[in-house]
Length: 631
Image 1 (tube, rainbow, N blue to C red):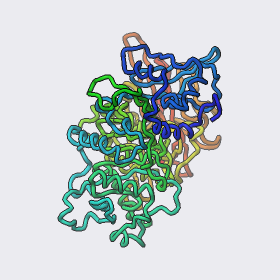
Image 2 (cartoon, helix red, strand yellow):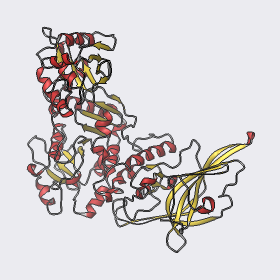
Image 3 (cartoon, one colour):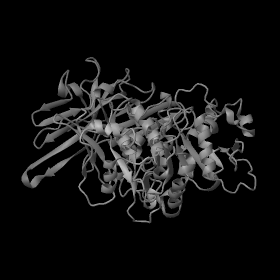
Image 4 (cartoon, rainbow, N blue to C red):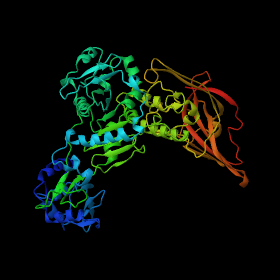
């Protein structure tokens, strides 16, 4: 490595592995002082390390902690006379190099004295790359605590045999036991008394030779699924299932017949049951495709010891140790929310419906259940407040009001429309399980709800995304017709007043609802209409002001100059304060455009709202009620 040149990110990862092999060589005099400084609180967070960066770089050849500090910096030149300062706190720490001209902060890290409960975990104690076996104790700790103390995590969508998927993979009881598919409707051997199963959440990726169930091999898979034919991710999931003492596993590619359209429709419609009834969801969070696997070795901590002292790992609880271990801090958002897996469209309902999720991230494991979120290194251990996909109506009394339920649903909608799909045709089907479980709004209407249809119809988008239709044939009134950012249309402290009526709705499918082909989707509404151009003329921006009335829209232009564009009143909110002789109201409306020559059918092209001050004429006030059909 060139002098005064920080390592690359790839080099940093390799350094972390190599540094663990330097244990026992001892640390330099300054790092010896640093260890005593860390283990003797309270103290000032800034510790003056080397007077210049080049000295620390030279020390890194023999001192494991200096070597670790050097790897904290991204590529780029560092002035050799820069002063090195270690900023140590009980949570996040960092190394800073400063000169007269600049200051550069290295990658943040955490430390542990290897004392107490967390310090005894393999992620801190091991000096070799971490494996599944070394992490099993903390997995069992999380799982046992959840099963025994978390009431919310023990609520499933269905109970008994009705809650089992149509097919499961029997992984056997031994490490070398062969696997096969079983039909859960068939008689089970008497010794199969424990039918708990794990489910795999994974990213398919662009793998052409993926192992999957087909009509032609289904019979063979019922006898045995040959281990050598399994992708690495599937083989890893089977290993985890066996190590956790479970005998059954659900994997979409194998438990759903991929070239049987009817079977796919039926099974895709059961996702609420599949994931909410699983004992555990195994999340291949850091895996980009089914060939990559997720049980790759994870870097251990870097140990820095004081030579000639007792083994710090054997000191009693609460005693001052003689060494520390360092690890790079894990960015939880990057490791989970921004991971490849959680950008996949199907994963929203998988993560939301699961009772317990074990995330296999790049650098460590994470636990996420309905009650708790925790990291293997112990820096994260808190109650799950729903920041990462919490379960909705499966937990009794989860939401105190319809408003809270609506907020939760639209939070999912905004996230869902930003996710990616290998097949765009799956965009409706990938919402089927969540729709089935989330029944607060009555009849589901393609991402909207019958009880909340008027407010739901006012969803907004961005102009630059409006022309991107995810699927041909989707109705214009559903947000699913837009491939891009979607936002809830009405946000107000006061419930808006209804200004329209849903006369009828017609949603027809070729087979299973939400997972088959959509044949027809229409809404019949009764409300007030006014011609758009009677109010605004030929062209407007996304805002328009007329006297004391201000209008805003989610698009800047609507239709062609020859088309009939109307404003359809949906609902309105506002404040009224007659004692001080002022008031204003806020009508919410849709922008619709006539389709064909019938004069009865219209498509939704946008939404808007207006702020009307007291004393100003409301253009909707003189309009008559009419019935129209939205398609």
